[in-house]
View 1 (tube, rainbow, N blue to C red):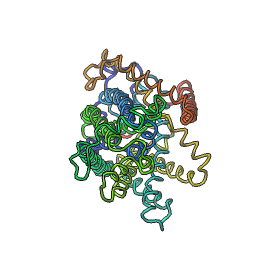
View 2: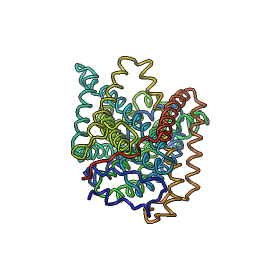
View 3: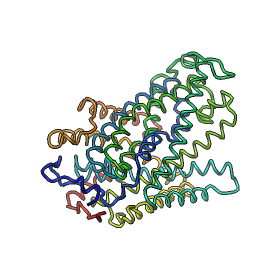
View 4: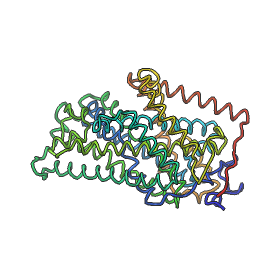
Length: 479
């Protein structure tokens, strides 16, 4: 009997009146606990933190600390909700499976395929970013060639046993965590004035240059929107947990450490940057906040050191997103919510899904060269708010499933959402507030509209499939 089929329930103890959503019994549990722990730890550190946060600081000033704290609190609530459901029902379909259980197959279809689309486009974007860095070191090789190389490497990694993905992510995450930890130690020493060659800045950079909120609430809003999307990708750990040795324990540990990871890595590093540098410093958006800070402190070769770290962050994201996209599409197909051809599993790996996700990512790269002003920009706008759509499905699903679990299978509530249902409702209201803020800002309004259009198309398609009685389950081979 397979590991997952052994966990399946009889109709009597099923926490939902709807037919059971099949689990991924044919995937190989090749991830060890150390892999999952480091994926959870390093997954929160992305290129958006290293580079994209510079623009947010330029808009919000020192209040970027508050922006990251507010959005971080929202993310912690979402991860707690997702952890509660994933501990009860480990599956590589993660929130898509939970949405299907709670709301219906149309919801699982919409959440799953929108997330797949987001990850595939992100693979292309990360490939472009990584190629740009390496091209600067080796200008004789064109950027597209580097992208092709990265795609081949990570496609190959994901086509092999899942433990290869785990090993790559383990070491990528270790380097990112080490870099952030070292940055924080250096920064705190500089703030205290004990770093050689530096003096304690005190509160001058936090309260001077226009104050803590120099651009008022509008600047805070811009910083808040930027910080919300910087947290995207944390969901991958619940997808990976389904292929770990101990999926429930892995989810529990990852969720329970989310708070301090977000607090230290994101909020802490933003506090260090704006405490040491005036937010008006042109170097922050130009070089990125980490490079600008290290240069300010006179750290030798700071730019090149951080370029290596950013490159690792981009390659790590490529690897993780190909993995996440292939598992999500494979799970959708196994539940009858996608083309059967994508569901073929060989050696415990959904290899057709891996190839499809990688090819789509490479197509995005080609579009960036061929049609940068229309098609590629359309792709960028379309994925702009997808993560919020996914979070919305997570919150609604948790509201419904928690009630069923308490009534029919309370022993599965290994992780519990805090102050249910009140904090879940608070999170939903906060997400609605972010949608409103996006509609108000000219720079994000188009993203909201395009994402809304994609979500509506997927929802209508999924609902039509549900009403027409499309096959809900596809048999998968047992281990």
